[in-house]
Structure formats: structure tokens, C-alpha cells
Image (cartoon, rainbow, N blue to C red; front, top):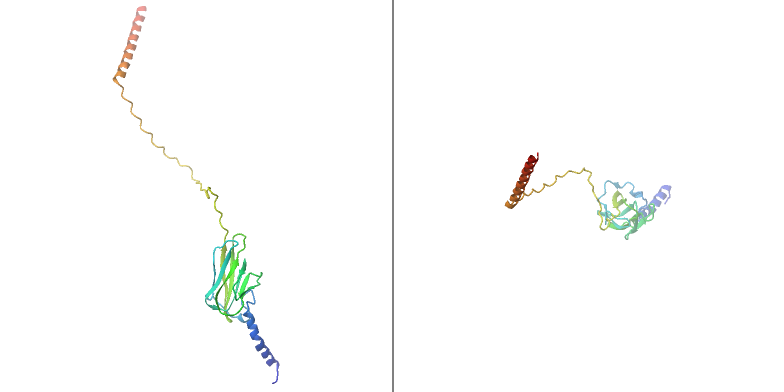
Length: 222
């Protein structure tokens, strides 16, 4: 057999190509999505794969279960989070360094998978949103992504103090004059008795007599 540079290159390629492909089955090579033999395999849409959460909204410091699933099996994936850490991951997966040792999870073999669930620990510092990016490799020449998931993190609202009022609404309208209630009707005066009228007439007669007598005496003196 006569060796030439072309036959030598073909031999080297056939020898190392399975190893190069196998290396991709041990996890994502890049944090930016599938590369290498997958480079031209991107497909539109999400391929029926999606991200779901055990609690949304979550609270700071919570541990939330993040599940990746779909309508058909997949062989590889890369899941990244913008905040928090993947504290617990299932078998057949591994952490991937993407700015932090626990910010991403990827596959550790190319066996078909229907779903997987990882635990995400939420930072304990206020209200914010967490974005998750997912790449799913269905076959070596067919993958989808990035598929985005959004997790809302909100601080628990403080309860109002015991015995207090949470909110007080005050009207800005001017006061309105209200009509006063009607006064009760006056009771009619009681009818005078006959004895009372007789005493009034006697006093009147005495007054007249005294007046006449005083006028007569004044006339005699003058």
C-alpha cells in the first residue's frame, strides 16, 4: 500500500471523528448554544420543549424546582440562569461553568431523555426577575433554542400592625350642608279653668274701682 498525504488525512479523520462527536455527548461545549457538529442544525420555534417552575412568583431565598420537558425525547441540553444557583441536579447531568460554577446545567451523556428537574436557589435580596435560557439538542443536526423562561421573585408584603388600619382614604370633596331635622310641633296651651278666669276678673274690678276712687278724691281737693 502506497501512503499519500490524502490517505493519511482520511485515516486520521476516520480515527478521531467518533471521539470528537463523543466529546459533545458529555455536555455542551459552549455557553452560547450548540456548536461543532450541531452548528447548522438550528430549527425555528421551541420544538415542543418548555421550562416550568414549582412556584411563580417565588420569594427571595426560596428553592424552586425548574423542569425541562417536551413532546419528544432529546439527547442534549444546556440550561442557564441569570441569577441564583442550581443547587441540586439529577443524574445524567452536570454543572457547566458559564460565568459561575453553578449558573448552568448540561447533559452528561447522549441517552434519550423525556424531562429533567433541577433545584434553583433564589438569592435573598429583594424583588427581581430571573431569566432562564434553554438549548435542546434532539439529534446531532436538529436543535432548538434559545427557549426563554421567566421567574418572578417578589418580597412578601408586610401585614398591617395588630389593631391598626392598613389604609385610610380621606375625601377631598367640600363638606355638604345637610338639612336640619324638623322641630317637634308645639303643644297647645292648656285651657284656663273657670276659677282662674274669676280671679283675673276680680283683680281687674278692684283695679278699676281704685282708679275711680282716686280720681274722685282728686276732684274734691281741687
